[in-house]
Image: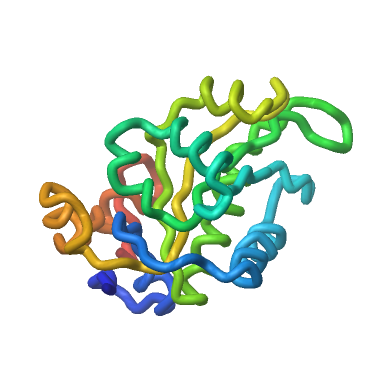
Length: 198
């Protein structure tokens, strides 16, 4: 299934085709998984510090898959338990070159994940990022050091059939996508003053 964005202005097809379904299908080939993280590797970052890390597991690794699934909130487990790939996005809190706090680590980890997601779209895969996970449990489960912070969970795979979802999620899956208008967040001169080109 596809659910392209209805755009007010022309954007690249990868961006309009990217969406976050909850229905997943077949397993993801290992070479495609490697391509996703290669894309993340080439994301931009402050001082080129690359402060991201990912803990990733596939459905055929039943022990680690279950450990990661157990870190998700119940509402996400309902649909994520069929995703072929689950992961955690992690920001490393300190710069590698001087050990000082990196105030942009989470921003950069988000950029790397966005790059990964666009690469997934290019490979006909889908990804659903989640804030609904237990960070403390993830830290304990995967021995994440104090110098790193889990910032999101992610499910990756081929899109599946919406009919395989619980009834209450099927309507959300097929609902039209929407976004706030540009005028509500693109400003000039001062906060709240919409830029003239939007």
